[in-house]
Amino acid sequence: MSTALPAKPRSLMLICGEPSGDQLGGQLMASLKALTGDTIRITGVGGEAMAAQGLQTLFPLDATAVMGLREVVPKIPEILARVRQAADFAVETQPDAVVLIDSPDFTHRIARRVKKIAPRLATINYVAPQVWASRAYRARAMARYFDMVLALLPFEAPFFEKYGLRSVFVGHPAIERARRMTGGEAFRARHGIAPDVPLLAVLPGSRTNEIRFIFPVFRETVTLLAKRIPGLVTILPTVPHVAAKVKAGAENWPTPLHIVEGEDEKFAAFDAADAALAASGTVTTEVALSRTPLVVAYKVGWLTATLMRPLIHVKFATLVNLLLDREAVPEFIQERCKPAALADAVFPLLTDKAAAARQVADLDEAMRRLGQGGEHPSLRAARAILDFVQPR
Image 1: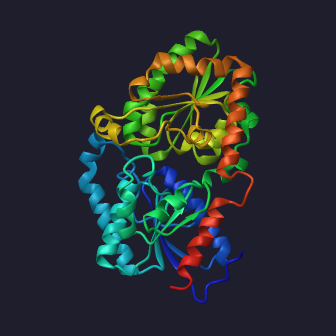
Image 2: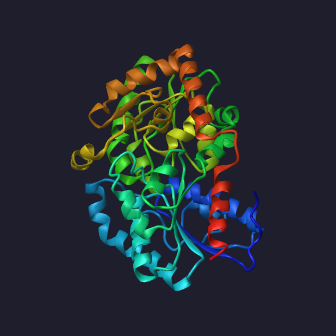
Image 3: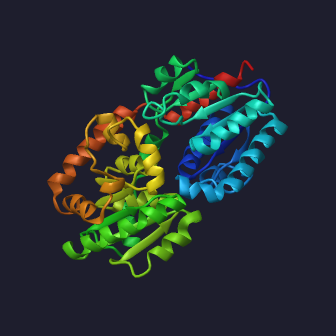
């Protein structure tokens, strides 16, 4: 099925709230332009990836890329101001649709305000919150302020349809990045890392509170590993809005350390690494696509954890494990997120080739179930959006 060019130039507003959403937005913009012959007008809020596709963002992501009750509270006035700014811009400019990407605590507020002021303005949710995992009642509420959901996982579409919300399964856009997970040998050469040196990628997250809660645990984990693995080297990809905090926290690091920025360097680092220690999130799927074995951890403030625990109804936090319905990737969440436990889990991935190979086989299977090998999900998402706005 192909989408005909619109009869007149179309306009869309795309809004994300953090770097992982920016990655998805950048891929979506490229696909939208490919389908429309680059005639579509796109406005909104994004980061580096969307800027590379030509977006002039209304504001940077530094205020909105936060998570956790204690972390969000000080930012509430600024976040709410950004919500009003984005929603009012949408109402003023009247795009054919407003596409809200991930970050539900931020983007859903924009959708609600848009629908309150301009009910006829179409709103589309790209990357819906995992309400099937916790707080399923939110799906019914979403049907009041979203016109359509683009679902990343195959079981999400029927779930939302059950609540009266139009939904289209498009697949997970992260799988499109598999082809970019190259350049490991050149990365090692560029940074003076010998081919046989054990190399660990440390990925503490891209949110300010993740750097606060997770980074110190990862640092101590590396300290323990350095005592057990002679010559260990670490690489630490980061993003601009937390780079200063990362560099400050990395002073007197226990191993030789390479801090890198930029997407190409990040993906090359994944390809170069023998194993990864990663905060739970989109990056774990990217690492899986690079076929690098990993250990996943996550930690938030105690109050956030206490409030959220009763609402979570899934066994795993990592998408690979959810897809396989077993703990193929070791997870250490909240109280279990401790340096000694993490070091024990990472150690065999760096020292036992058979253990690493077993996990890589599991990663490959999970990515096939996610849609790797089929049509690009961002292209399917772009086509679904254009098909939706065409009659309007």
